Image (cartoon, rainbow, N blue to C red; front, side, top):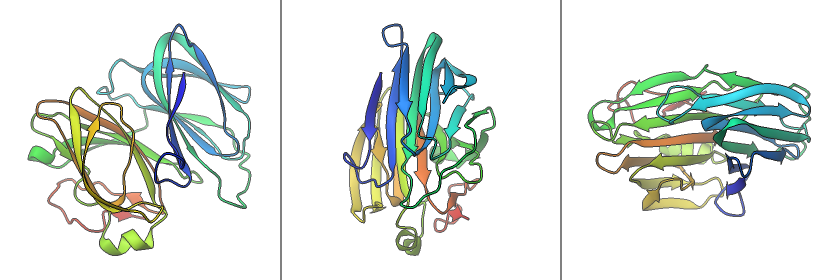
Length: 260
């Protein structure tokens, strides 16, 4: 089953869209059309076989829980314009399908799609209530979608996405930045927004986020905390001219935490 969670018709986005794919015995396969967009298939839990435009890429996934350090993704270059078929491999599977619409006048990428397996870089970030683990999947040259995930244990570490992800002058300079989160928790999250979306809409306030509730985060400040005693996880995906930098401690400089 494929369900669109976020796109420009539902949220303050321009080019990025987020979909959830849940495969089981009643819905063992799904076919996706890229329509020229760059695509990223990101495995949450379970395992499935993947083929793209007739090319078999094998199985991805294998986690029983998102707390396991096993991250698999498949990237599809923009411009393929062909079907992407995902089939069940004897397990239930829960995945995210992220697309980035091509820019006007964009070129067709002739490279073959490929799988990224177990190449994620894990960062231990922050201390005390700000301690969390951030997993960063390398972004190959020529691709626009950056991705990874963040995990807070809910005991010592509860806060994440802090310090602010951009200095004030960067919010204007990199206004095309788009980012989405897909959170999972047995409790809830609280997020404080103070920034700007790619549509120029201002984001300011506090919101409650439930398990499985996909959200758009602004460029600027969007720190969040998980409910007491609950583990907090979220996969994140963003488009930007800048790449995130993960400081070892949350007390490091707040501004300019993106690097080229």
